[in-house]
Amino acid sequence: MQITSIISWLRSQKAMRVVFSLVFFFVLFSLSIMFFCGGELYAGNKSKATRVILTADIDGKIEVDEFDCREKVFIYLEFRGLKKGTHKILASWIKPGGEEQQRSNVELEVKAEGKTYATWLWLKLSAGTGGGFFGDIDPTMGMEDFLGRWEVNLYIDEKFIIKKIFYVAC
Image (cartoon, rainbow, N blue to C red; front, side, top):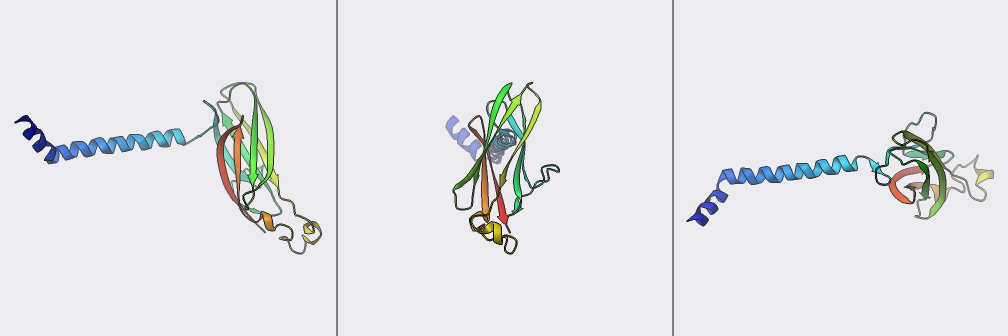
């Protein structure tokens, strides 16, 4: 008799609402955990990269993802929550063919925990053979390997923190 009443209750609309509510709250809870934990970039246990932007203007820090082949590509970083001491920041610049073009390094000295620290790294695109002489006539001369989709992979203390995508055109 009890099994029959349990089965009939499970088939009722009230049971469906309870099950739906539980599933809905579980999904909502899971998404909120993903949003709040993944909303900032982690660079270790408690340290966070709170701002990572690509820019051609390091003074104005205007974020862009498309660059002219004659510009420098800056990546500006802000960190919060780093432990006291020296931290090594590395940017690995990957050109459109998938090959690493350059590595940029900087050491960040943290003197007090809990403060925000900022630094920047850059990539200077340089033309290949013949590009310098003919570059005024045709800016793409010698830049064929540099045009297209780039990525920069950022690390702090040898731990990956983020990949940023950008494009270079002439």
